[in-house]
Amino acid sequence: MISHDAIVGQGKAIMTGLRDWKPWFAAYDDPASPLASRLAVVRDGISRALRETAPGPIRILSLCAGEGRDVIPVVAAHPRRADVTARLVEFDPEIADVARRAVAEAGLADAFDVVTGDAADPARFAGFGPADLLLLCGIFGNISDADIAHTVANAAGLTARHGTVIWTRHRREPNLVPSIHGWFAEAGFTSLWESDPALPESIYVAGHRQDRDPAPLRGDAKLFTFIK
Ligand SMILES: C[S@@+](CC[C@H](N)C(=O)[O-])C[C@H]1O[C@@H](n2cnc3c(N)ncnc32)[C@H](O)[C@@H]1O
Image (tube, rainbow, N blue to C red; front, side, top):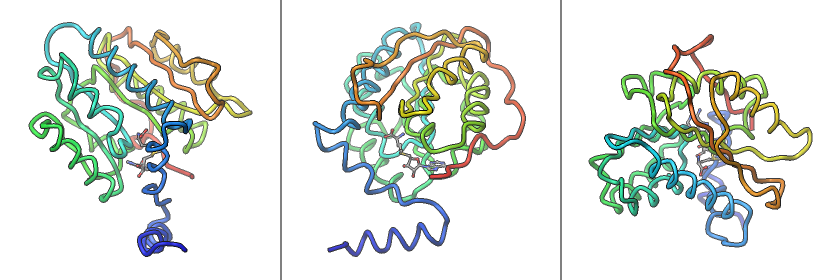
């Protein structure tokens, strides 16, 4: 039987025109799920980026951050923990609250700011400064190809020189991953690593390093619109 919460969620989604993402996170709790495998790769990439960032402060920006299951536990357990300041931007207030609770439980409330709002709107991260680590996870499978290209071009304006971007996308046909790599190269990023091709095609994760100083944001101020 469908739960009361699910019905309320569907009602809100209809009113706002946005999908209710809350049930999506349950797949993380099944260690055999492709999403759990993806999470492990993203966490490894975050840990590596923290390890490889030059000594000093580390700024992390996560767009469409969800429950923060990737970045919160990794920072909490990492030797560079004390260097980190993070901003997580999540549209759904209930999902943002889950992230806030996880931040508090990890003892990171002084360093992590969970912002409820539209991550496509640069006003949500204005003043935060170029990120040493930018997380674009769970976005590129839900926006148009043109918006992916636009977001990648603008990632150059959001990332500090030598900063890392971690992104995800499925590899189902038509497989856009090669095009996304090309857009990152055009934006001044070098490919650092990618997930094991033997993983299910619903999963792909890659890390890139920004080799230029951050550029001004380009074109339309809004980065993307979720269409799924
Ligand atoms: C596929 S989930 C990914 C969550 C997280 N990044 C992860 O990988 O676990 C997409 C998330 O984006 C959020 N979202 C959708 N549109 C958004 C927007 N315009 N601004 C901020 N968050 C948004 C959804 O509520 C959902 O939590």
